[in-house]
Image (cartoon, rainbow, N blue to C red; front, side, top):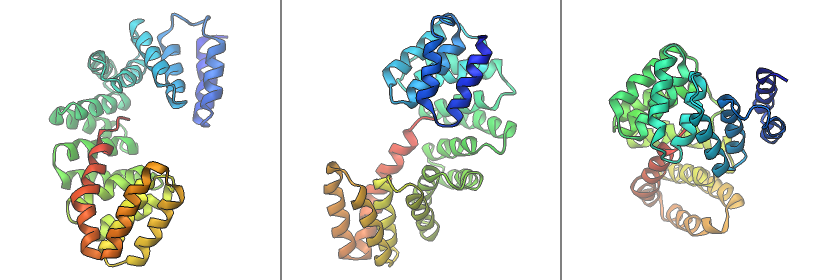
Length: 279
């Protein structure tokens, strides 16, 4: 089979969420395309989705070592090694944006990298370009919001994140981050709505359930707060028990206590960690 045929079949499996099937197909042809950077890049994507982070990192490294000229491959592989703070990530992502000036993905991933490195103005420039090229892509709007939030520009962050939620209403992650940014701006009712919706969309996100519960209790909706607490308790792991007890105590103590825990401790920490997550 030709490389394009193999990758096309692999992509189809990946789009269906069949990452194991994608990886197995690519493993079958590993010897045939050992010198192809695109092959190693997409195998790295499959391995990363399967939780094989170390193997994925080596795949992305090998892909870059083969000197790819395809901006998509450079962007994906560069983003893959960026997750490991690899110093080669910056050059790969910058080159991808230069080689693919009309490719939204290259600007998106380069901008996302720059934002996490603290280069906010450069990040916003790249992410704005990504949005111009593909205004209907929710990830571009989300990453622009992240860049503004990391720079402390919360109103601009809220605008961009609101666009991301509008473009992808079923994204629990985007809604929770949007809600946390709204909290920073003391937009309580809007924040509560986004946190609640995000928690409902992703019931396995125990932290989101707890944040929504505290927000509800802080807004005088104790019954809703306790409901979210029980949702969290249902899926909690052993390491979650201490924070669940603390949240329960604060909800029982009243709205002011719930608000203090959320605003002073939980929400800032959640936002910091979630903004640091790379695409």
